[in-house]
Amino acid sequence: MEPISSRPNIVLILVESWDGRVLGSLGDPALKRVTPNIDRLAKRGVLFTRSYTTHPICCPARANLWSGQYSFHCKSWGNHTGLEPGTPILPDVLVNEGGYILATGKKTGKGKTGEIGIGKHDYLSGGHTQQNRVTDWTCAANIQLPSYRQPKPIIIGSNVRKVHAGDWMKCAKAKKFLEKQAKRQEKGDEQPFFLYLSLDTPHPAFITSRHWLSKVDYDAVSIPPKDAEPIHPVFQYQRISKAWVHGLDPDSVKRTRAIYYAMIAEVDAVIGEVLDAIDKLGLSSNTRVIITADHGENDMEHDLFYKMNMYESSARVPMIIAGPGVQKGVRIDVPVMTVDLYPTILDMAGIAKDKAPNALDGQSLVPLLAGRPGWTRDHAFSMYTGTAANTSMFMLRAGQWKYIAYPGYEPQLFDLDADPGEVANLAGTRPDMVAQLDAKLRSVCDYPAVHAEWQAYCKASFRAYRDRLKGKTIPLFEYGAAKPRATYEDVMANTYKGWTPAHAKQLEDWLNS
Image (tube, rainbow, N blue to C red; front, side, top):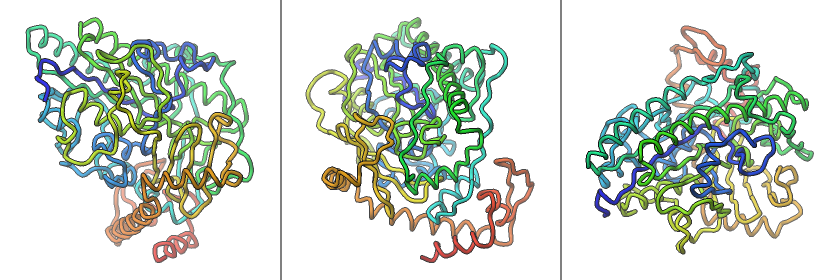
């Protein structure tokens, strides 16, 4: 174990719903002025250009990050099912084995609230709406009805800067924490700190002001290509479930995409204030900064919003790491994953991997960051189970290829070099690559067995939920519903718009299958 004096401070900024391709430095002309602070950090460190979430929805993505495990190992199946309270996680190891100070002032992340830093935590079981948990459990019943209600995208008719005030408040807390740590370390106290800052923007709803929209080159905002027909049945289902009603014409799509980019411009400015504070407080020489996201955002690609699939817009995330010992201005196109951050942070902190309370699925990025040998993996893996999908999804990215298996449905295969928009499924014309990548995927994850385990979990969870509601009522204030007390039928009617007895029978048939 490294002595405390040699351990760096570590700042981890986790952003909500950031498509990893939406960076000015990657060359999109619409984004030239959108991410100046992230681009500045990338010049001082390493930018990973093929980085992926391991589960593109909030709670499982974060459960994977903090446990260091894929969802099929840590059993985080959806937004309602993450880690159980009290599960040892990465911040616990940093405190107990590395002497790190957390931004909460608490010694561990084991409290009931799961607090481990500043901002959203969302890695524990039991959260999210009734609608979210019910669709998590019943989506595989293939009930093709709308479940989501997304507000119309809004441009505030003013130049207000702090549109998403909550993130600016978190920024202020982070700067105050950094000031306190800088004063402590100036006095000779060498105990390192771990600042986890979680930001909610640019998670929908899509809303911005003219101030941030002015950072986007509106004329250069691209319209995504349309998917080749026929539409894959999983995405027919997603389109119905997500129920976008605010226009798919080019003008509406362009406006929504521009608003999303403007939201990223705002969160980039929030991050910029934190980066400036690190510099001004003299912390840069012993602080490593990591910026990534829990997942991406479809932002009208494939006629979809939110995440919940394996398209680049949803599964790819930014990953920038800078600080002492990290190469400067380097781009790396090796496929990496958010689950790699757990062993990376342990490595940075000089803590042996075997100090983790469980086996880790990721690999330390430190060899890549330092530009030395030691990296051995040639692929990235991700999976999806949960709301708005009528089956599970399992993805492997290797070289130019992306392969996605959908139990019960045909797979997808994309050549991302030739088809970055992922509109031409080559699975039917390249059986050789399908066989090769499917075998590699199965070596990472026995996905038919995982799918069966997830199905059993869903059925058991929904039956237990329904039994608890028999003859009872619960509060229901979500997605436009305003019932002080709601019955089981109220919940189902609010979850699936257009719910009928025929759908109830379809659900029952699936439960008994």
